[in-house]
Image (tube, rainbow, N blue to C red):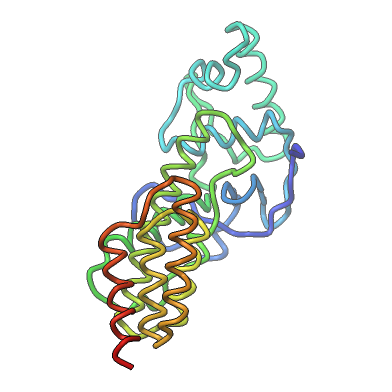
Length: 261
């Protein structure tokens, strides 16, 4: 993976589940962790070496101040404490040189600055709003926020845990959104949400079931059966199991409809 990449996507830093309103003029530093590590300062792409990217990402994933020793020990596990500390100081120097507003350092603590907006936090807020939405037709949802995985090319344990946590959150939000859009008759958007959820995890039955239901609501029984058969074959090949009774009953209802025609 290259040590730095350019950023063109805006994001938002959140301290709570519900984001505060942010005017465009207030956006100073934007950090992208979904899809790839990218950084923009005052609308200008910023390049950081990989060591500095790791420090920024680690601090950004913890919405609280962190002891410097903890950050150094977590990022340089195989290095002695003095070497890990030196590596951290070098990375912080590089970060401060290109963007002094990015990380706050005080009393041996590190914390992401309030001036930084993080796309992950914005996406989490979108997902939580959708998961907790009991009414509405799903209009206005920022579905693009639910399409990317956290730093997909990074494989350190501290990234893997957060990636899976967010992946589960965004897929459940897509399922909930698909259900609401289907009930509201917004079938094109429901189909998009269902396909995004299936793409996120093709073995996930709730996503496949949502896709079948959208096809059914569109009157496309053949497409619904085809989607089910593809899922059934994938499940058998990958896990050696059959779809649940709930999924089978959905297809049985489709078969009954075809028999009556």
